[in-house]
Length: 437
Image (cartoon, rainbow, N blue to C red; front, side):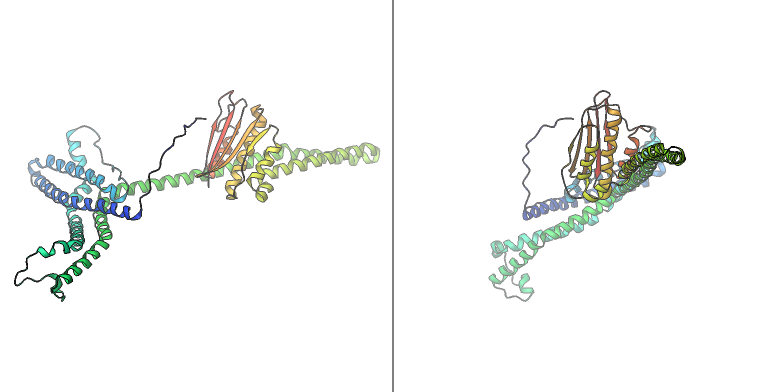
């Protein structure tokens, strides 16, 4: 086991809701205000390069110009992905770009032109000014309305009035007194300030989602498909592990019945047949044979009870995992140090898997480990249930096929968990199973 040094860390104080809103307004405002001139620059530069390249394709000069256009668009796209991060509170991953298969000039020229993400970068650079202009207009309008309306009373008196000039309040039917104008503009400023967060946030998201959809949408979709494929593969592995674990359990049960109760029942039938023959000639010998047959019957019942506990232990169903593990520890021929605190009942599949992990591990310890002591720990953690069985025996255990723990590994994987074994030769065995809840 590796030791971890304790470190004292002071958590950062959580920001209050008003502070978070003000911080987000600042982030979204700078994103939109900076995006407008960048959008104008991008569309001007990229359209010029692109159409120049298209127009000069007939003399082959257009190919390097188009290649330069793609790389310029990619540079703007990289910069934009970095700017989007604070708006969405997450960093956008760099998408996949097709790479040339060799270093030839032709491959280098045509690979970006044949790459879908490069064309999406160019499409974003050419049309980004549309959402940028819309977002910029709303943000400028709302900031001007909020700041101008709230402060109009401080500077509105200095505005000159021409003979034909009318202020907005007068055009809307209010009287022309200075106090009325101050009240009108103050009310307008309060309205703009009160709705500033949602308008600025919406404007930033309009521009941000347009950029995210073109610059990272395909990559995010690819990742979702990969995660779905990984989930399906994991489900298939769990299904295969469940089938393998069930087959292993059935083979073990069949072998145990054949080697134990079945042989005793065969001997019981032979003893009863011999006793039937002895009754006529030697009643005392017949009684002794029947007595031996009764002993065989009791031993057979004990073995059948033990096998039934391996299939579905009643104590686990009735009293829970802690009681079932206590009973297991009491039956083990090697002294067991059990650490299994009582907690709420878990899903039946989780409790059953944890029980069989400990049961199989203790059986292996008793048969093969030559250990003098075994420690069993079952702990409830944030991500699931952690089961650990450690002994001080000869070691050498393995999860490889053909070893005794292979079936147990299948059972744990069928439950969605992971089984690990650390068993150096001569240094004991530590078996750890992590089961998700």
